Image (cartoon, rainbow, N blue to C red; front, side, top):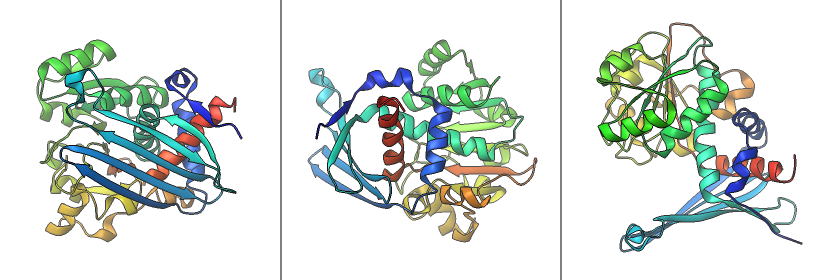
Length: 304
């Protein structure tokens, strides 16, 4: 049996809206089993994220993080996604790590925005100016025709470069930009809130992307208290990321206030209920989303 290798050239054939449909369909299958491992040698790290979905198969996403590599002209992060057949466990494919990560991350938040943002929302604020922020512009443009982008970043030069690449406006003041935004996507490495709940106008939707550790968060307790709160997956967010851990610990919200995740899409629970409500979705990623995304990418590579 031949093993397929899918490289970065596949990106030209991928479609953001098709990916959101694949993610939604994937959550109609039996609930995924997921597991992560983390190994370290000094400052170097091996991270593996694994998922098994009955009817879809198995994915193992392995990443090595060697912070000193760039000094030798080698990327700091390297990896691959391996796909195994559900029926017999045979290795089917190796899919480019960077492509899977990019499309999984932005596709996750696009799916949330399509379900939770107001249908007439067009003013989008991107907080952060790195690769994830750039991919969010690509994703939103595909799903929200006529979207208008503003960017804010701590680094003025990075914000300017981002604006030149995307056509976004640069925000001189984050509070002013947040008050006029209808969708806000946060893609930072913040360990303390950068968005304040008092800034949010009724009807705003927030895609929270950046925080992934217990000591990280991007919005404050007031934002969480004012919003109807959702997550992409309860199992990878509620007890793992500061964005949920901290406001639950402070009493700003209860765990029961997390109203749904992508497994609730089919029931209609993962949805906006009113034009004026503020909605938040925490994008935590997760290996099951890597599996769904890699399967979508492999299907495209096979001509599907």
